[in-house]
Image (cartoon, rainbow, N blue to C red; front, side, top):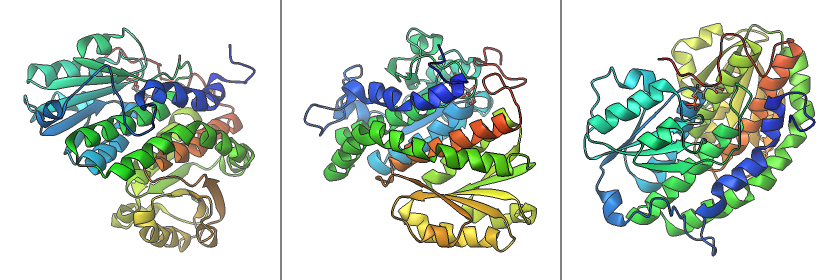
Length: 366
Ligand code: F6R
């Protein structure tokens, strides 16, 4: 059932082209111009009925929420807050009947997320679940459900569920932007065509497998690693750091590029691995400055950039390229090398990849 792969995690990383295709499946109109959600069938008035969006989730799904916030705010111009589900209920939340609460959960059974959903509903919010399990508790509790079609995810470390959550989040943001008219029409079509290309583009990324294996061999016994990114890449950095921590047990931290110098730069010294994401054009030059800051302290930098970016390799020790894509598509590509890096780091250290210590696949206790 591992389909010839040594671990479920590696199989699930390789399942991603299909998982992504199955998830966008029915959500793009035949002419490729419109995001479609028959399960919602909302009108412009339905969208106008809420003035803010709240996303609640845990762990990797929370990271998908952070990316989705940027999708929705950029494309539909609706303010979005993202809360960790276990914190939300105890925060005396500003949720009301003009709030759309989106919960993101692979399993659909995470207790903290379910409890947060119930609380948001109690406060009057309209609710939408993005989940991978049909008929799960969260899908039954929410007013509406959008499914990701990643298929069963067995490995404790989430991979294909995350990328399909981003696809669902991006499609939903385009849907909102098309309904409320806040999104540039051409941009919407570009994003939809970019989503359709994703399965092929993700396949292309698997070429970096050998490189990631080599980095893991070289640096897999370091005690710390840092992940840097700005804008959407910061959320990707957080996901990369979590993956590395949970399966390889290497201490990892994610930092917004510009925030490093406000404290954490003190930890950067010779030989510390830094994985720097540079896929976001709007902040590219700023990111390069941040890379120079860590290089000046003799960190080892692995830069993740888009194909055709010859500048990046001048500033880093190793460069990994993902296919060039629209900035909203880029995070769905950039996370794949990070998943592979975490996987091979765990292998290098002899860790139990699919069943990391102390963790359960579905957390049904609060
Ligand atoms: C990390 C991971 C966890 C889950 C989290 C939420 O790789 O898998 O952080 O993302 O426990 O689980 P779901 O999405 O099932 O609510």
